[in-house]
Image (cartoon, one colour):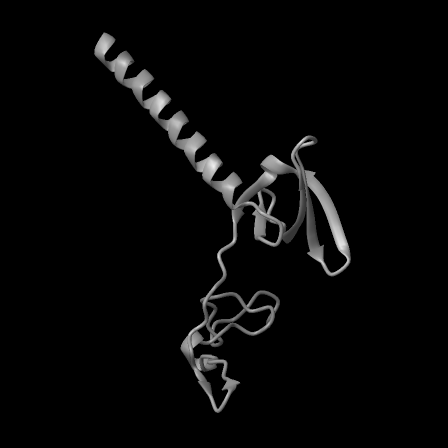
Length: 123
């Protein structure tokens, strides 16, 4: 019984240290100009960081700056590298054919309804 309790305490301290290390790594990558995502799903670019008040000025749209608590920043967004599928300098967007999605039901029709079955209200 004591061994199980000792293991539980060991893993609690280990997880705490890991979370602290991850938080320190995040704080190191938070610099003005970095694109970030907050805990509540808001994306933006860091304009400035106030160390004393523990606030971050976040630009969410051109000309729109909000102040949030520093700890609400969940992660720094890595830039997404798009595949190089451009031809003659024009990037093309590959859109799947509608037949690849399957047939969608018409408006008001349920999935799995057959057209030959009588519906309620039909006489």
